[in-house]
Length: 320
Image (tube, rainbow, N blue to C red; front, side):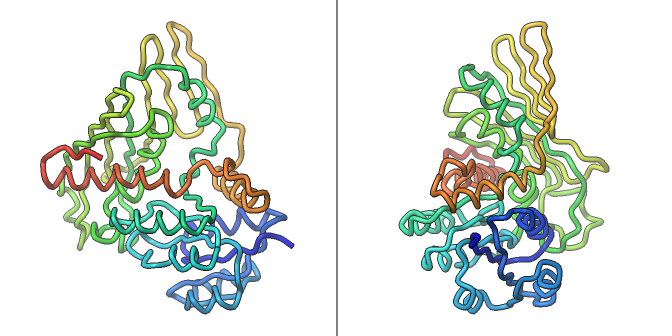
């Protein structure tokens, strides 16, 4: 029998996970729950699962081994605690939430339950990310330069900072996480943000652009720039040290060492599928090392982004 999987939230990212799990012989998706029952029913028709609008009822009846939490940042409520209390393993989509104290409380509950808890930072599972991390493992890093520049997301809740946290928290969090994965933990954050240029999007309260200065525990310095007012999309991370520069942009890794440049293209498949397969295998075997982004580790990423919001409002650096 495969690992019994259930879903809470059946939006776009859940569809990505459902497709990935449908090709995993060890996963059996049994149910999905959504506040809009029709969405869960559509998923049921496509993937042969039972549809619910009541989480408690779904968990009681279906008794899943694993729960994928794919809800917006503001909608986590006590979902993690309910799963942990039943011994259900978790894959929680990014970001983990908008309240640092609440997230820390959830993390403690998860630890005490002893369950596996993965998070949706799927870019860590790309082969080029692994190559980059290995290359940097014995290097002294001087600076990290990163950006995530894109257009506006029309999803209604995304424009409301009280529900999404803004682009840095909800979308560019992947870039923040990858800077941590490659360069280590961040010890302080200082951010500036502009709350304008989005007047043509009614009800918008998120910043349109942001720049975030980072001090890493290693002594390296860095910054991340974000924008949601561009007509195109661009995202990249540069890591600089003595006589080398590493650039990770999408599925392409470039290393300049001295005067020699080497470029690697990713040959791995979908990062989401690799991540989901690893999570299912970790449940089957008990091998926690297969999970490259745990809940505890993802907490540090959301800390950086929420601290950046605090810094922008206060005008002061925030020590983590």
